[in-house]
Image (tube, rainbow, N blue to C red; front, side, top):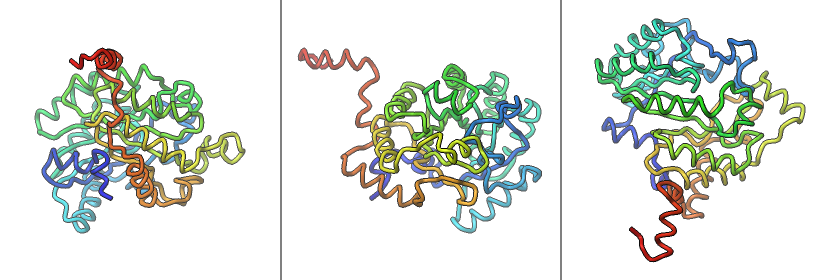
Length: 323
């Protein structure tokens, strides 16, 4: 089964922009996030190393990190174009001058077509966006900002100690959309406090906003986190693999068709995780997902009928006027 027959893949999205396959080069910066800085311990699912399980040390220069990873990928995949990915923690939590210095160093690296910056909705400020626009104008390099939202259920956001609500996310998206910057949003579809309807409404919410990319994550539980302790003590339960696949297929059917999907499942080394993907490899999960999409006869956006005055449109059809 060809996945591009069922949804708009991120790889095809990049090929449309750059004419060939493009590869991400992760960068690990010496930065934390406000949710850790304030002493609350950060999000309940966040490990001590953030998401940089296999990243280079943040004490190595940006150029060295990019060079080491690029050499491996070039050799393995014959790659020619790359994205510098500021992956770990909250990169716009860096002081502005440090942020500029880091971005300038990355932008000078050869064969870059894009810089992607991972951050939080409550760390988006006009000063940073104005600089990113200047950098884009000066270099021609596309800028993408990746926002971790995870869920629109504000009760769940509070329970996982996310440290922000929906207002901060909407504000961030609307601010970014004033600039020539692409927006990616991260969503976890099986947080223990969310129902299926929470996941579906999250996708409806995203589809109504000017975003370009979404990353769907299946929840993994890193060791030595608050969520790990809750899981080990039986305080939370997780949905089944079958329920996750059901949520994922229904979400993609609801998702606006022009939004690229970068990820369907989380990937994390086993030694760092107490729970991940129900003990199933991500590629087997993807096969099951595609089979379910085929069984349901779903494609991305096939049920995205709730925008642009949906009730008015239904009323017109009912009364014999489709205009």
